[in-house]
Image: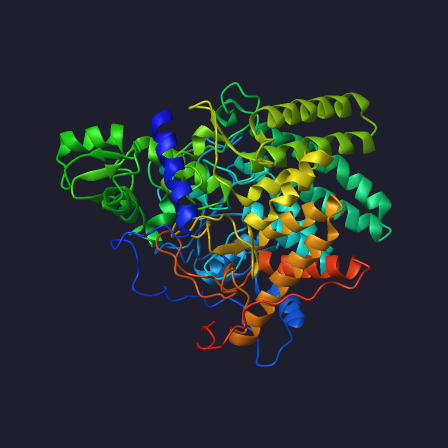
Length: 584
C-alpha cells in the first residue's frame, strides 16, 4: 500500500514539474467534445445583459412535480417513472401528472429510514423520487435536485431575492431525510446508496438569516425548530460507521453500493477509458485491474461478481472491460465514493480517484466542523445549552483531529490523509481553503494558506489543482463552488484584496464567455479563461445553465461592492468568439 502511494505521489509530482501529464493516445480526443445541452437549458436572447439572464434563468432551471418536463431523465433511455414513498398518500399534482403526461407513478417497496436501507437493484426500473416543492436544477442534462449544487444555488436565489424558492428547496431536503433515508446525491432511485457534501446546516442558516434580515423573526425562529431536528439527523449520517475514516476521528466519503454506477450508462466509454489509461501507464502502480475473459461463461461471471462487478446486475458492468482486463471491486468502491464527494473525477486519490474511500478529506471534515458549530448555534438559539455544549465539543474534537492528520505546517496547507496507508497526501488541491471558510484554521494557518494562493491562481480565478491529468476536476479547470468557498474563506479571514481580485477574474471570465455564446457554463478553463474544454475522460461536455456559476457570479459581485476600496485592475485573456452560440 505504501509503495503504491509513493509511486503515485512521484507521478503527480512529475506532472507538476512538467506542467502537463501526457494523456494516453488511447484516451486523448482529437478535438474537444462538442457541448450538448438539454432543450430546457436557458440561453440568452441577443443583447440580454448577464444579470437579467441570471435572474430569468432561475425560472427556466426550475422543476416541479406538476410539470411533465421534470420527470424525464435525459441521462437514461428509459420510460419516465415517478416514485412515491411507500407510506405517503398520492398528492393531487402527481395524479394529474400521471394522467396528462403519461408518466408511470409507482411506490417504493417499503419505508426507508437510512441511506442503504434499499438498494437500487431492488427497484426494477430507475426513476425520479417525488419532492413536494419546486426546485432549481444545475443545468442542461439534469432534471433532479442535487445535494451540494443546491447550497450554491440557494445562495444565488437569496442574493437575487428568491428566498421562498430557496426555502422550498431546503424543505425538499427535509422531505428526503424523512422519506428516503437522508439527503441523496440527487432524487433518483439510483442514488439510494450515497449522499453528497454536507451543506444542509449552511443552507438553513442562509435561509434563516435572509428571513431575519427581512424582519420575519418569528417565522424564522419557528422554522429553526423544525430545521434543527433534520440537520441533526443529517449530521448523524456522517458519523455512521461506514463514513468513519478508521480511528482518526475524521470522516470519509463512502457509497454503500457495489460495482459501476448506473448513471454512467450515458457515457459507456468511461470505465473502458480508465482501463486504457491504466494499461498505457504501467509506471503508475495500482490495484485497480483484475483479469477475466471478455466473454465470460457462468463460472467466470460468478468470479467477476466477487472480484470486479456483477454482470447480471449491471448493464454498465457488461461493457467495462478491455482485452481481458476488468476494474477491481475496490476501484468501484472508490469510484462511488468519489461521486459522493462531488469531484468526479480528479486524480487526487490516485488515477481517477480510485482510492477516495481510503482517505479522510480536508474539505469534508472542514464542512463537518462548520456543521457542528452551526448545530451548536442552532441549539443556543433554541435555548438548549446541553445540546450546544455537545456540538461544540464535537467540533473541538474534529478540529484537533484535523490539525493532527490534515495540517502540514512545513507546506502551510491542509492535505487529505490516507488512513489505510497511514500517510498524509502531497496532492495540492483547492480544498485547502475549506478550513478558512469553515473557521477551522487559526490566524497563523490562514496566513500560511493564503501565501499558497499562487499555487492555484490562474487567469480566470483559481484552478482545482496544479496537475493537468485530463479530467475535469484538475488543471486547467476552475469551478464556481470551490472558487466561491475560496473567495469567501479569504474574506472571512481578512484577506479582502485577494478575495476581490479572484472574484474579479472569475466574473470577467464568465462575462466575456457569456458575451460570446450567450450562456453560462458548468466549468471553465481558467488558463485560457474560456468555456472550451478538452476533457479526456469522464464528463466531456460543458453543460449550459448553470446554477452554481450563476450564484457565484452574483455573490462575488456583492463581495466586490462591499470591499469599500478601489479594486485593482485585472486582465484576463480576451475571449475571441470563434464558435457559434450553442443550441439550447
